[in-house]
Every structure is written in structure tokens, then in C-alpha cells.
Image (cartoon, rainbow, N blue to C red; front, side):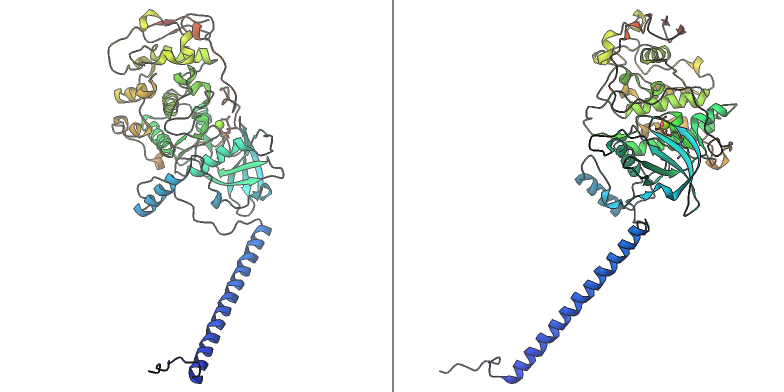
Length: 466
Ligand SMILES: Nc1ncnc2c1ncn2[C@@H]1O[C@H](COP(=O)(O)OP(=O)(O)OP(=O)(O)O)[C@@H](O)[C@H]1O
Ligand SMILES: [Mg+2]
């Protein structure tokens, strides 16, 4: 039986021609595609080169939305970013979003505002757009490899902290040297400290509520992003003439984790520093920020910083004079903190009846019971007794009359930063980064010679100092 002849047999000239034709067409298509791709690559390379030459980082890329504003991201976006968060490690550098930095020469310095511990701040104008901004030149300790690592934390946390109540970091610009790093931020007319110093009367209760709600709102966002601020104080809160207030100065801010890592003790400016930090805790959490909020709340009420210690020992004396001394009932375990061993407590500090002790009403005569209750909670000696930022926002104090004043109804104040240098202030400076906490002897807190300058009537005991 002979085999049937194939349709595709070699000797079919018509089929051969057809196959050859198809091959040619395919080859032509492939070549055209490769050429198109090459042309596209060349065009995008040319654009990138032109942008680098102009110092332009190209059209703004869509920034990852980090706001937890209820009407901000949609559910799908949020789920995606949750997923991203899970895979990312503790130190998150948004590298992909960073382009080459512009040079500081793009800004014209208008006037100097203030020199702080971590930077020189001036008011400046963006030469290209005419916009007025704040320019903070970071003070960066040089490291052996010449790379300014410490300042990166401030940049990194500020970059991530996009919230209506956190100062907006527009960009980072460079000078000529590696350690000439400048933060370009939105400019604000006031900081709360300067404003309180200049005001004749303290803010009204309705205004205090509006300010506190914003500050704690910003802080709640930071804590939800695993960022501790660690230097909350009135000079680090910026205000404009539209009743808006923003958290600023992230020089001490850092990410933390659960369980908390070992952290440096020497954080937070003395007057705003919590008792657990003063007593030498190395494991601490967001409660230290809540203590500072308590100090800021007290300062808003009286226009004066609440606890103005001269040194660490005096600070602890002043705290205990306000809150009453600690005992093992209100603060179990405080004895095991390194500096608590030298504390000699007065006999009146024996455990008293349960519940959170209230601060003396005589210190805050115009505050309602709900307000005193909130302030006492924020200034609880035991960190676990302090409300979280979220709990603070839900406190009845903000719901009772007088209600928070609408921001648009806020008074305007003449700006100090616009025209002149802000007045030097007699307040302690932020701790130096990386410095060891001093060894402290608290034996003098109750009646010793190391404390402050005067005796003061405390809650339930008498302090004899110096
Ligand atoms: N964006 C801004 N707009 C206007 N003024 C600003 C701005 N940022 C900072 N300032 C002013 O500069 C001061 C110092 O800024 P900042 O707190 O960021 O620097 P610092 O060196 O870390 O300060 P310190 O360590 O003394 O707290 C602020 O108290 C405020 O008066
Ligand atoms: Mg500051």
C-alpha cells in the first residue's frame, strides 16, 4: 500500500511560495516592532537627560497616600498599602519616589527665623514660583563615611507623615557640600510658644479645644504609622492665621516597634519630659508623647510652661509636687526603674484609695471637671494610665460646652517670623542626639539639697528644696 501524498509535500511549489511569503511578513513585523521600541527608548533617555540638566525631576509622581482621613483613600488602595506595609521592613526609605535634589540656589533667603538645636530656619522664596517657604538647614554631625545619617531620620519620618496637622515637607535641597542639606517646608507665621509669649490673655476654652484636637489628631496619625515624635513642645507647633496648627521638628522622631526596641533615654526637652524617662526607662512608648501633650494642654490653659525644672532632679520634684508622689498602687513597678532606687519617698506616699488621682483643682481654677479629668489622665505618673491619642480625641471634654471654635473664627495675630527674627526664648533646648543620659541621684527630691530653688506645696505633701 503506497503512502498517501502529503498536502505539504516538498514538491508543491504553490505551498512553498505561500510559506515563504508568510515568513517574510512575520520577519518584517518583528523588525518594525524592534525599531519602534528603540525609538521610544531613545526619546525617554533624551527627556531624562534634559531634566537632569535643568535640575528638574520631571512631572510630579503620584505620591503614596498616607492620610488616614476617613474620606481619603478607597478600600482597594488601603488594602494594597496594608499589604505593602507588611512586606516592608522597619526602616522604610521611599527611594523610588526620590529624584535628584535641587540646589538651594533655587531659593532666595528673605530673613532668618531661628537657630534651634538641629537647624537654622529661615524664610525664603522659591525663585521659580515666587512662593514663600521655610528653609531649615540641618545641623548634621559628620560620620566617618561622610554621609549624614542622623538627619535622614528627620527627613524620612517627615516624608511619611503626610497629614493635615503635620508640617508639609515639600522637598529636600542640597548646597554644594555633602552635608549641606535643607528641608523646604510650608511657611507658618507663628510657633505656639512665641504666640503664647506675645498674647496678653490665654486662649479661650473653645480655642484650646480646637488647637488640642488638631495637635492630638496629628499625633494620632504619627502613632498609627509607628512614629514617636519625642520632642513635643509649644515651640515645635506651628500655626498660621487661619487657626491651623501643625506638628513640626522631627529631629528626635523615630520609628518604633512592638515589642519596643531599646531606645535612647535622652529624648524630649526637659520641661515636657515624662517621669518614666526621667527615672531612666529605656523601654518606653507613645505614652511619652501623651505626657508632653498634657504639658502643652497645661501651658495653653495658663500661658506659662507647666513644669519648669532647672535640671532633671528639679524636674522630678516639680512633677511630684503637681501630681503627688508615686506609689506602688498607682504605678506598680516604678521602683524598678534605674533612677527610682535613689528616691526616698515621704511617708504620705503610702497607697491611697483607688482610681486615677486628680490634679489639684486650685492650679486650674477655670477648667471644667471633664477638662481636669483629661489633664490628670495625660499627666498620670504611670504611663499605662495615660489615654492614647485616639482615646484623647474621644474624651467628653471636647463634646461639652463650649464646643471647639471653628478654625475660620480664630483671631489673627501679627507674625514675628515674617519680618524679624523670633525672640530668643529662655527655655531648655532639645537633648543632643546620641548623647548618653547622665547618671542621676534623686535622693534629694524629697527634702534634699539637689532640687530647685524654692519650696512648693504639693498634692498631699510638702516639698522642701534647696
Ligand atoms: N515651617 C516653618 N515655618 C515657620 N517657622 C518655622 C518653620 N519651621 C520651624 N520654624 C521656626 O524655627 C524654629 C526652630 O525650628 P525647628 O524646631 O524645626 O528646629 P530645631 O533646630 O530642631 O529646634 P529645637 O531643637 O530648638 O526645637 C521653630 O520653633 C519655629 O519658630
Ligand atoms: Mg524645635
